[in-house]
Length: 222
Image (tube, rainbow, N blue to C red):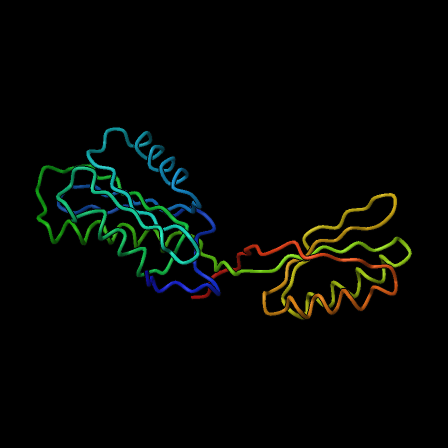
């Protein structure tokens, strides 16, 4: 289904965010947290239930996957469509994925009505998102190289310069008795150029292999 999420990168969270609203004596405690599986989302909901065991409702919504195609919500006893759906809509509007939102409601004794209730749950999620550090997940290609010790110093220096010029990253450098092993991540568009760069060192004993795709987080802009 069309979700509006882009394979080239999607927003996510680097950590949790929280909010607190009071509307006609009802307290709405919002919580958002990064997750990557439905099981992790369920664990967050269980933790919020435990932390606020005396709240009347614990409504939740989650969006998972790079394209945001796994979407769930529940009203937890609130009128159907008054809690989970507006919470999910708030996540969609923010274009975030791999995130779960939970809003715990302490009932204040005054019924709000359907419209105010939907707005309260959506606002609790929006304010929690505003409190959370956000990142953009970008797909990257991972490459691994091995360089003999006689070449490793020159190779690592050149590799770091090449990566820095293209926004790539050297993930790991490991030494063994025979060689130095280096793993790196580059933007998908630079994968072919990275292969060409590494192949250019073959005459000096450097070998390399592609490790496949991965994801890397970058701070989200305003």
